[in-house]
Amino acid sequence: MSSPALETYLARLYTDDALRAAFLLDPRAQALQHGLSPQEAEAMAAMDRVGLQMAAASYRAKRAGRAGHGSQPKPAQRWWRRLLAAWT
Amino acid sequence: MAAAAAVAVAVVAAAVAVSQETARDRVGLGWRGELAAGILSNLAQIDVLEVIADDYYRASRAGIAALSSLARQVPVSLHGVGMGLASTIPADPRRLHAMARLMRQVQAESWSEHLSFVRASGVEIGHLAAPPRTPLSAAGAIANIALATRIVGSAPLMENIATLVAPPASTLDEAEWLTQIIHGAHVPLLLDLHNLYANAVNFGEAPEQLLLRLPLDRVGAVHLSGGHWIAAPGGGQRLLDDHLHDVPPAVFALLTQLARLAPQPLTVIVERDGNYPSFEHVLGQLELARAALREGRSA
Image 1 (cartoon, each protein chain N blue to C red):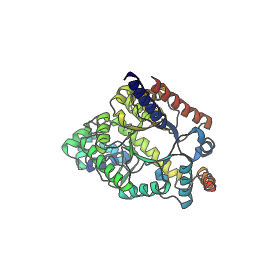
Image 2 (tube, rainbow over the protein chains, first blue to last red):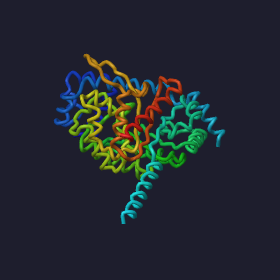
Image 3 (cartoon, one colour):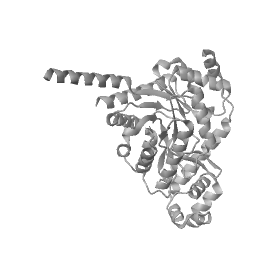
Image 4 (cartoon, one colour):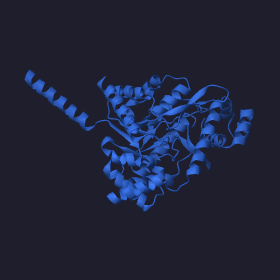
């Protein structure tokens, strides 16, 4: 086991609330419906469901934090870049 | 004859002493802009800095110049977070080329990445995720690390990650999976002791026993950080590795255990990503790391 299809399904479970809710109601059927093998679907049915919800919440917080910060340098980054540039 | 033997023993002992002194343990810090003032004012107490590489893949010329200048003042290691090398899906060569470019520009002494996947088929998870621990994902990781090594021009140190979820469909445990990759890819292990600790306490294993099952002779560097306990749905709690808290005593104890068991020099990096204390307090964390190393080395 472990395949691109399984990793893709896991990535979607971690990031898609509706998909995850459906999975938690009927894991085996949902896994099969999303193209996993019967063996993979069986393994997914035995998944650590508490951990799935906690990991998804943690990843959501990380994504939100990144979106909030954006890609602009923070003031602290700008000043040390000027300082180091002066050293060269 | 006895005198000659004594001289030979003395020569060997002197050589070992010199070697140990030359290849000594180092203790440093993860570079963060918020810590810059403290770091630049206290470089004498910081042996090495670790810089998040992804922050510089698209940096301005001035940003690269500043980082290069920093690397001339203190040894710098570049730390990647977005390659997703532990996957059955081939890594995106663009990120590998970006690391190669940055390594050339900055002349960093080393680079590292995580044993995680971060995306699949266009779905970005947004953080480090543990793939199913199987021989197939180990093989995928080994292939991706080989590709990264070819493109970047040097082998990465590969880091174990923390996970709040037991990776589903796994047929190997964490120690077996990590060992298979580290040996198969011929790379050093960047051993994050708080990640190890969190996984152990979250999934019912003794941290000291988990440490013993890792390839300790392959550890090149160590990460130390902290976390906090969060409530689990339905009751109970799990330890979240958040880099927002001090390194707990149990993790310093693991560093002492590691220093006792692994004779090679270790580079230890303290990571702090927010909830910043005074810089004196940060330096205190580095001193605790040095004390833990000394205790292990003298045991």
